[in-house]
Length: 526
Image (cartoon, rainbow, N blue to C red; front, side, top):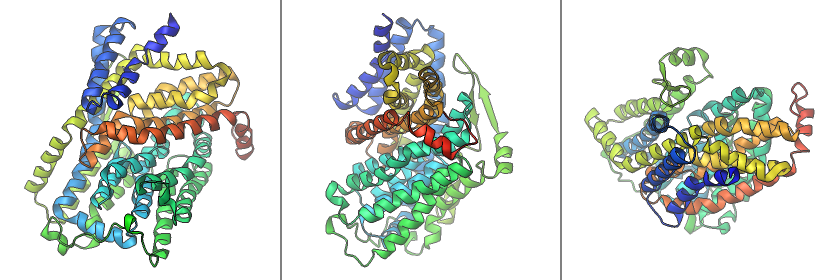
């Protein structure tokens, strides 16, 4: 009976996938129906009290609105405002000046810039902003979204200055530095592979790799090598930030060296039209055009843990409430990416010549544009909270442990991916599934660090499949309602990455921890 109950716990997830792919329901309807199914199962088979179910859903709604929906609204507002002021026309001209090759721009904007945004801000910015820019440059919106979603899979573990990895360290008691290093080691082959997949996706097929192997390989190597170094000597906080900056510089230099080479017509973005959507763009300097994005990066850096005095001061402007049936939910009112991005957008917009009235109009239009996206994310977060508090998520994990036994390492990334698919968050997946991974490692007498790292790998893959991530992407490029198109497009690549992750984690579980131990003799990781 327990085994059957564990299988039933999967029904809301199975239905969500079917609703999006087979029945092609819009994302908000698919998630609302999955929320209803999860609530019915929790109330009946899991005997969750009605009040607790309601409070769990309410906590999900609140967690969705702040900070997740806030940062998505902020990111799209910033992008829409640059369209209004004409700054995006200037940016497009400058970026195509680096390279008119669409494949190079996928690496430059999707991989490097997206990695930086994930490392500093997270919460959807690394998908929304790069996808919006690529689509604005003339790239097919669906391909732009798919490339940026792929890019976001593995930096997730170190997003928002490594909050997911730090959280996993705190709840499991594992040291953060070796945990971060083990995670980067596990991700190393994927950090090299993903740029190639992005070029294939962004270029419309494997033929897009012709003439791109060198710069694509170097973009991955220059990203992951600094990650390894920083994770080994400093810790996880700045691993992705520094890796993305180094990769960005390298890609720009290599793109400059390729400028004399002709760009195949099918990948040529061409020169953007000189007459943009605003007369302001004609006289706008490149610095002013980029200013809102520069301010985003400056604000996120200055308020992060890299500058402890500012971070500590702003941390006091926060509140905690017990909304759900257990624990408290914390809200940071100032030092949260959404607030900082809106601030950067307003300051940058004013300097670019936008009036407050214009900005309010753009903000109102952005909210209208994101109505269905907001409903989608609120529904899926409420479903996640109900499944968590009722015990359904724990039962899903227990199902895999029961069925796999000693082969558990081979499926540990799958469990994490399911958790991330439901929650749409790497951090929440670490909280939900991380302790289970460590407990399973203890029972199987293998490295706790190895399976904890596997949780981060699987969570990143599951996140790019999540309705929350898909809703963010479609909203960024004006494809709201086409969630099923993106899910189908990303599914095969995510499954490829997940299969490779399972093989890597399972086959090397008895070998790699010992080798890593020899590199980190001051820590016990086996």
